[in-house]
Image 1 (cartoon, rainbow, N blue to C red):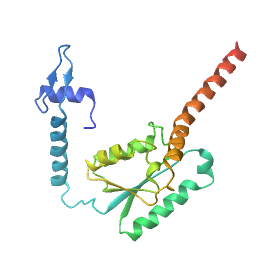
Image 2: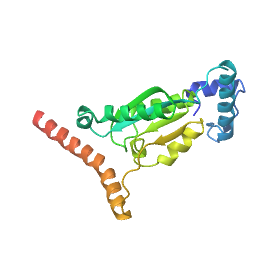
Image 3: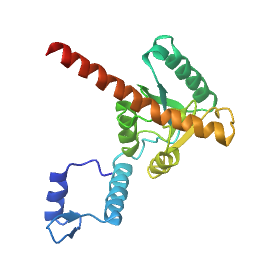
Image 4: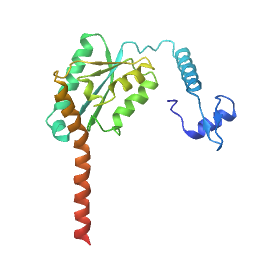
Length: 198
């Protein structure tokens, strides 16, 4: 949340820049209120040091496709161009475009987390998406609320077609099973290769 390493937190605690609670085992526990206090203090300092820099009318674009096949046929670029046009229509300046080729369940998406880090630095005020599922398959509200802590709103152009609850449940189950089946297949393939090499 603060974007600093453990050593920095220990140093801040020694200098009494942040307070913590010690467990019986001697581990430090930092209260959420203390962390929020520091975040507010840092954002205030940024406003004072950059009084003329305003990010109110700036946005970033986040786009994702599930496979390299989709990327090669130009799906990513088409979505980006559509969002750039939309940003222009509503009077937003595009600061950056973040793109990932990965499943919506993959939490190790490099550019998704780069965007979150930049949001904490107050680099933009809006995130534009084609569909909200492009940001994450599950837990959209968690990410949306987290970004709102840094005054960043998440906007998407289209809703996915409304489905019956049963169809949505089947889609969710397939989305969960798909990455696991891929991992299992890779494990089997590497196991067969090891047996051949032996």
